[in-house]
Image (cartoon, rainbow, N blue to C red; front, side, top):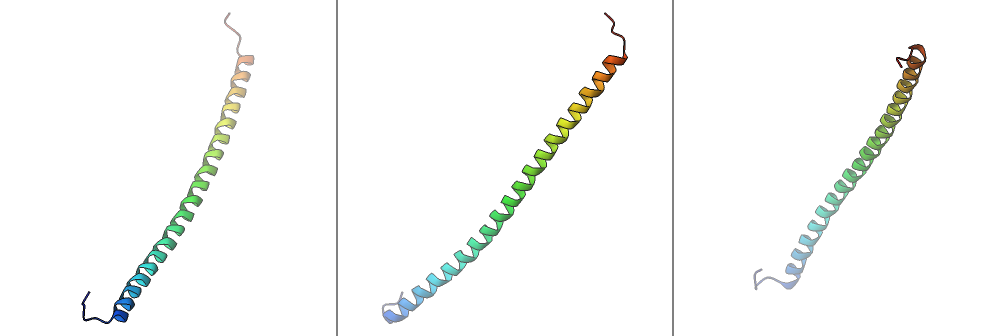
Length: 79
């Protein structure tokens, strides 16, 4: 800062720096909000996928148990 500089020029310079920083932070905030939104959507998608996989696994387990039960009825016991 130059001591010969007009106080209004100094004020104007500081305000310009401040508005520049504000604009930069505003842009960064918007980008982060978008990133957060995308991350939440991806998390929800992964959660839904996990639920579907759990349901599929349960159906497969039930089917295997059913088939094993049928085999037990068909095969003579070796007792």
